[in-house]
Length: 283
Image 1 (cartoon, rainbow, N blue to C red):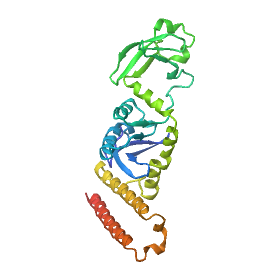
Image 2: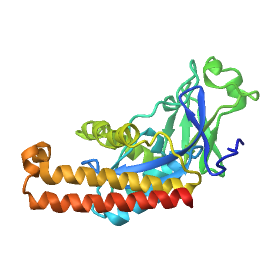
Image 3: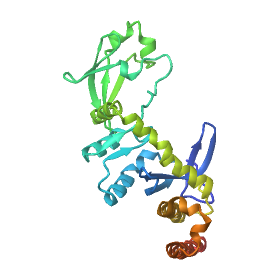
């Protein structure tokens, strides 16, 4: 495992197909109006789904009236689906392509029989339940003697013992519910709003507030810096909401007691933020 010599708490993040950098990952939640509700900071080599439970608990505790959770395909796991559905909330995830080699049968081509708890392969042969591994996946194995003579063997498996294994998570039924929700009328339109909400939050944070890089070392310092940045973004949006289009009118600032009050508060906040940033640098 690669460890940074300057910051041992960060992790290797794969940026695109070829570039690798030491970084941190900020799993962030926002509402439909782009206000940041919470975030969890992790080393760059952590998968997004690993910190979802902490972020979910953080946000739903502060905002218990949340009814719908929208996330990208990286969060589409049985554990996350179960957590949301058991909490009487609606998960909305996009379609996730099967991770299968080209030229081989896709997993959905193996039909699951719930009554007999088995799979049926494209050649109408049965794959019986064998065991459940430590990751919580039930394994279904084919008959080796039948597979050796099968005309579809080259499209089915590359195993040396000519045995096909299909796995099914013990909470797979929750992912099936997620798939049913995905096909519900209006769900596609809700998911498309991600480009205007959380993606906009990240775009503004990177382009306008310097979130692409950090000058700090250590999880605690980077977390403090990111907290201040998201707080500033929320305050800026709140100011725009408060005054609307008048905020851009130069005549508005003359003899406006409310604006003068907000301006004094903004200066106070920015001084506080500057002091915090200095303490982070020294700390």
